[in-house]
Length: 198
Image 1 (spheres, rainbow, N blue to C red):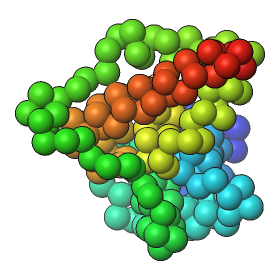
Image 2: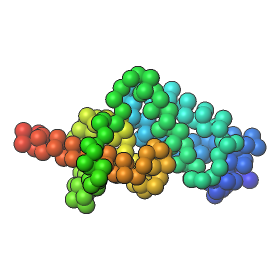
Image 3: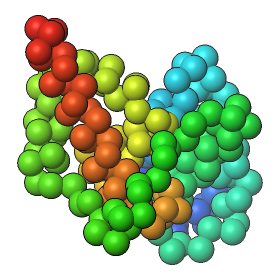
Image 4: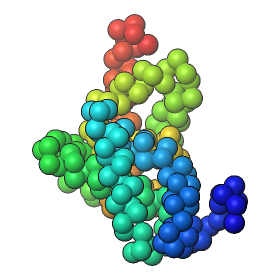
């Protein structure tokens, strides 16, 4: 098979070729997933100088663990899960706040789900170039896990099921974290608007 035809291969075929020693096939996997990996690493880890080492560690883990991949999710989702776990472990070793406090008990009985208005306003800002940078700056004030969830849901447009697989969080927790993150972003943006910065 010509290298130019590798992009036609399925996840299963790519994994078979990689396990058979085809380095070009693994390069293609990196190309297919590097944007998603960069998003996760970039949202969870604020020290940019650590990003290259973490990305290298992620792909090394993926390569070494590829024989155990069971195709229960897409290959990109599996690599995203490795990325999330690697960053999570990094932050835990640094003893940093990862997600913020869980919602109060009464909210477990009546879960706060993201409203369509919340989702729409954030998504609109992400496509407005003049405000996207401001929104990105405000996102840096969120805890790492919430930043990552907002990115996976709104920027990468992953489903709740995929996000739950990547983060190993229950769907209700993912939705609640997203709700809180959007509310915090809206509060911050409203404050900037009142100050005249928006």
